[in-house]
Image 1 (spheres, rainbow, N blue to C red):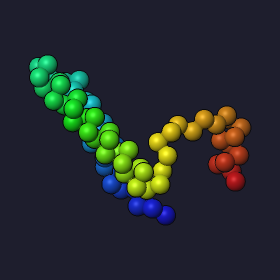
Image 2: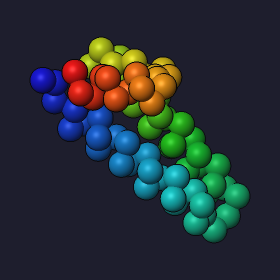
Image 3: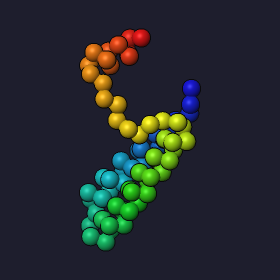
Image 4: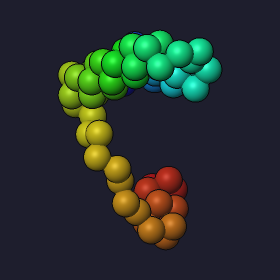
Length: 71
């Protein structure tokens, strides 16, 4: 099994940065934090590629998902 700790930390960091964007006190701060969030998103995508994970959403029906979970 792959170690995804770094990926989890990146996701948590992105979540916190998005919260900070919402609380930004000026347009300058909002723009700066938006750039940082975009950089974090690119880092997440790179980490997912490194781990061999797809960033594409998986579209499964409820029945398909249930089969995958019980297989």
